[in-house]
Image 1: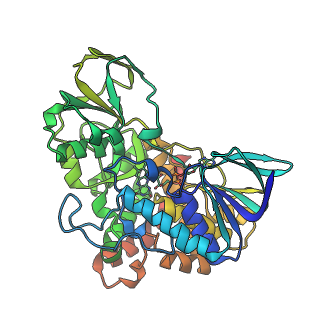
Image 2 (image 1 turned 90 degrees about the vertical axis):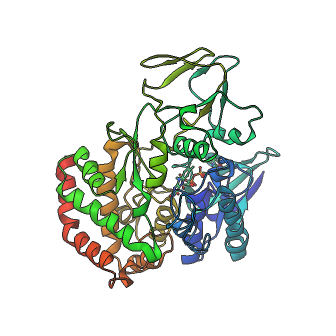
Length: 462
Ligand SMILES: Cc1cc2nc3c(=O)[nH]c(=O)nc-3n(C[C@H](O)[C@H](O)[C@H](O)COP(=O)(O)OP(=O)(O)OC[C@H]3O[C@@H](n4cnc5c(N)ncnc54)[C@H](O)[C@@H]3O)c2cc1C
């Protein structure tokens, strides 16, 4: 049995693992072994549907040490006026280069693809090759880093939980581009970002809205993309922060909180007559929203139980259907719900969200806190987990712990300075733009409302 020794063993080379390692090796002189059961870094992006793009601008996605994309503002198309958003192919290529040219080049990082982490025993941690079955024991001097805790669930690797009768065509969105026979109509199953991407792609590709049926058991709240812009447009992101903090300071409950943000234009929903029960932090533009509203055939009979050639059975009823429909399964959860768990434990780090959204910024923040030299209790104060459970109700704890962590890190000058210059922080550079009235106004609102917001959240959550 082969044996290795390292300071950190990182399981998972998706966006979380890569951002964590990149920041850790830049701030320390430690050795790291990274393992992933996939064949290269990039995580779920390696299996993404071909028309997927980042929800957010590339300008603050990826790792700290390397720019993703060209920080260009799109001039045409549905993203016109906003910073560019990478495709899955661009993201996968980027992570490959980060691995080769940034991480392995340090001489302190080793990467083992096609390798499954199988847990630890008295000999050490076990990593088994998916190609040869060889078991390697890894002795870890400092910590195991679980970069799989917020692992994404994507359609191509997901099996629908409902029954499908023989002869019914159910495909993941990945297979839409390979259809060899036109469909009588498309039924999109699912309520999240993948379903929205799929509907928008079908509409853009020329499918008439009346040929799309959308099974949407629960509606969601989404961030308006106009408020998530960085760099030259960072005033938009600062306005989001300001309105978030103002709403947190004034709200009576979660419904009041989301409705205040909706009134400000920060949060949006597809159907103003339906109260959304889902929040996963996804982002959408108003143009995409308008396009989605052209789809009238929305089915709200609960979750699908069975799809037959002539009938669909739901939790709340049945619906006649056409045997020539193509069903696009978009029921994989994307961002999986998690329970909050301390990030820093005695022998391990559970890499997870510690910022309000933006997976890579969270992972890099965890690495920055890890390298601060503080003990685990203090590190947990600096990076309390921000747990996305998928429910609208979780938005208040997300707000509370996101703001608590931000305040704790801002009080540590070295961490605050790191965060200010970190390219993964959407607010980067805002403090240098105080001449911009939207930025100045936002800072004033944030400073005025921050403590009242934390007090009010504590009260409302109690
Ligand atoms: C379509 C889509 C778009 C998104 N867009 C954005 C966005 O714009 N901005 C944003 O911040 N977030 C976005 N997200 C959220 C997303 O969760 C993160 O951006 C991020 O890519 C998740 O990375 P991850 O490393 O946590 O998980 P993953 O990408 O799932 O990576 C986890 C890795 O762990 C490996 N692994 C798991 N178990 C083991 C094991 N036992 N042994 C070895 N390896 C193991 C897996 O093979 C995988 O490669 C998006 C999610 C989806 C699905």
